[in-house]
Image (cartoon, rainbow, N blue to C red; front, side, top):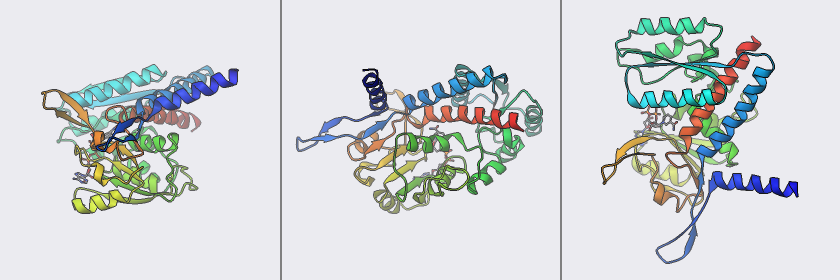
Length: 331
Ligand code: NAD
C-alpha cells in the first residue's frame, strides 16, 4: 500500500514537471503537444535537495556556505536577478549578501573589492553581476575573482578546465541546460544537437559539454554531435541544421527565431533566451527565442519562458556555491 502511494507521488511529480496535452489540428484531429519541461518545478526539487545537504553540512560542524554578489550601477534587470539569487541562497541555508556600488566605481576599485573577498576566509563564493558599466573591462574583472570562489565559472582557469573536460566550476546557465537534459532523461548519446548562440558565457560552455566524452574526468560530457550556429549563420543554413537536430539549445535573445517549420518532429528544444517585449495590448512580458505556441505542436519536449532555464540557472548557482564551500574546506 505504502509502495503504491510512493509510486503515485513519484508519477504525480514527474507529470507536473513534464506536462503534455493534446490540441486539435486544422483537419480536426487530436494531436499530442510537446511535453513542457518545467524548470521551475525541477529547480525547486534541486534546491530542496541542496537545503538538506547544507543542513547536514552545518550539523556536521561546518559554517554555512557564504556567497557575495557584487552589483555595479542601477540596471533594473540586474538588480532583480541578484535579488532572486540572494533569496534562493537564503532559503536553502547559504549566508548571502549583496554588495552594491554606483556606476561611477572605477575598475581598480572593483578589483580591490574583489581581492578583499578573495582573501576573506568566511567567503566561499563571489559573483560579479554582468553586464558591468562600459568603463570596466569585464574579462579583467572575471579573472580577478579567485578561481575556487568563482561560482559563475567565468575565470579563465575554470573556462580552460571546462574545455579540457576537467572537474571545474561550470557557468550556471550551461550547467542548468545539461542538468535539465539529464533529469528529464533526454537521450543525447550520438544524437544531433544544434546550439544556436556562441557567447563565451552561455552558448560555448553548453556546446563544450554537449559534445564531450562522458567518460572524461568532468563527468559532464553528453556525447552528442554538435553544430554551433550564430549571427553569421545564413538563415537557410540555420533552418537546415535545426531540421536535422534531435536537440536544439537556443541562446540568442532573438524572439521567434526558432519556428515550428524548423523543428524535426519529436525533437527536444531548450530555450535559454530571455527578451522583454511589449505585446499588442501594451503589456510587457518575457519571451524566449522559440515561437512556443507553434513549436509545441511539432516538438517532443520544450522548455517554457519564463519557467524553464531561468529558475534552473539560479538553482545551479546554488549548487556551485555549495560545491565551492566544500572544495575550499578540503584545501
Ligand atoms: P550574447 O548577446 O552574448 O550572445 C548572443 C548569441 O546569439 C551570439 O553568439 C550571436 O552570434 C547569436 N545570434 C544573434 N542573432 C542570431 C541569429 N539571428 N541567428 C543565430 N544566432 C544569433 O547573449 P548571451 O549572454 O549568450 O545570452 C543569450 C540569451 O540568453 C539572451 O536572451 C539572454 O538574456 C539569455 N540568458 C538567459 C539566461 C537564463 O538563465 N535563462 C542566462 C543567461 C542569458
